[in-house]
Image (cartoon, rainbow, N blue to C red; front, side, top):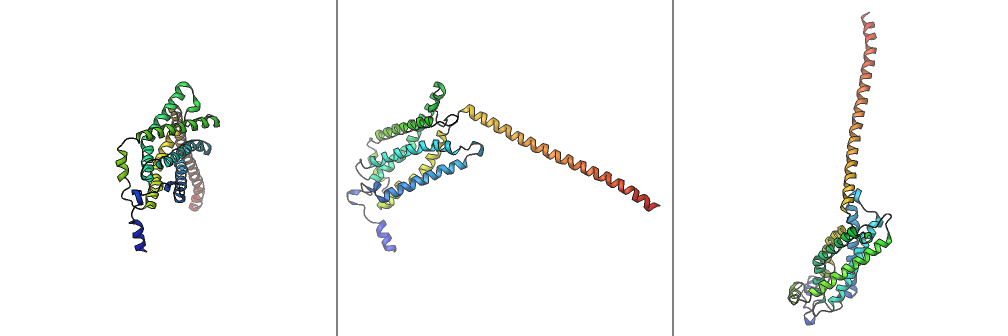
Amino acid sequence: MNTTTNIIFLQEPPSGGLHCKKDALTDIFGWFLQVLLASLAFTCLIAKRFCEPHHERRSWLIWFYDTSKQGMGAIAIHMANVWLAGQYTGDPCTWYLINFLLDSSLGLFIIFIGIRLCQYLARTKGWEAINFGEYGTPPSPNAWMAQCCLYVGLMIIVKVSITLFMQLDFWENVKDFILSPIPNPKVELAFVMLIIPFFVNMLMFWVTDNFLMYKNPAKRRRDSYSECLLQKAKVKYRSLRKKSRNSESDILLSADDELLDSETVPIARAIIT
């Protein structure tokens, strides 16, 4: 058993110096890893909703509106990365990982700028439909659709920018060593399509969701002020209730003392006589 395992992990890379084959990202094992990653990422967003403070927790509809935009963008970026990885010369797993890491760092910065720009235009121009995270009362599907289109447009800008950045020559040197310690194609594919993306996506989805659920400062201040008043009212109510209980106890005790005194005097007189 150990001998077989050693042979698998120490085998030579496929011919041509490639760790992954050209179709490694789209074979059965590759698709299995991608579906598993998507399920884990979706679970992470559900967990994030339950981690939100109770008074700020979004309804399931608003949560769906927020996260579905991110889901559409993630699918578009992922499919583009899978396709682009096969267009470069060399190991497609390496190129996919480089694209993914750039999308999760430089791309996240571009997304942040784009969302904040849309929110600024929504406030200054009155274009409420493009104010990310705000859908009106009641929530409007039209606003959600407009924001979905904008977000996918941001993803396209991110992908074009990253693709142009990838044309620089030094990436050839990066791809030669980035996954060189992993000689086994299956293990490399698991790292590229599941293990590394899981931890990076968990952070990226969490941060991006905070961007997408952004509230305007005035509303945030109103919510904070209302919550503060509610807490003060609760404290005041508990204090009054405690005082009321204490006063009732004092009245009952004094009444008991008076009753005890009134009963004790005749008894004492009877004993004396």
